[in-house]
Image 1 (cartoon, one colour):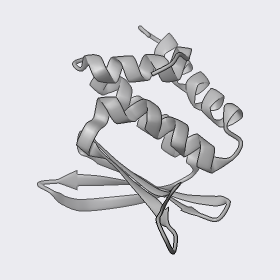
Image 2 (image 1 turned 180 degrees about the vertical axis):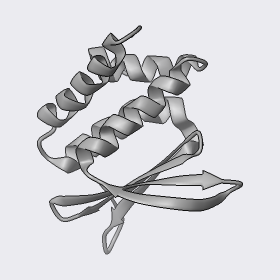
Image 3 (image 1 turned 120 degrees about the vertical axis):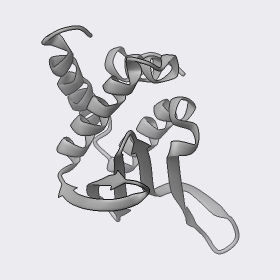
Length: 133
């Protein structure tokens, strides 16, 4: 993922994620499964709760990368995505974006982190070229 090909690779990865996961619930679950080992506590997942026990269905995802906070909240079959900019622990800006833009910017932030983190690099490789975790 060097040079001008890296942005193409990220666009292809985002398109592949969307194509392989037409259902946004499945898409977020697959993305969280890939990112969990690399992001650890920076990945927060909210799950639906039932009357008796917690469900495995994801209702919201929050990912902290550098000074950005990526949030996706599921509401039935639709998803609301936003990217917040944080400075000194305080959110100073919040931008509502499309799922496509959210995925592209998240993968871009992951690419930046992959330059100095082996776990992030491996997660990005799994997303871009496929593989098992």
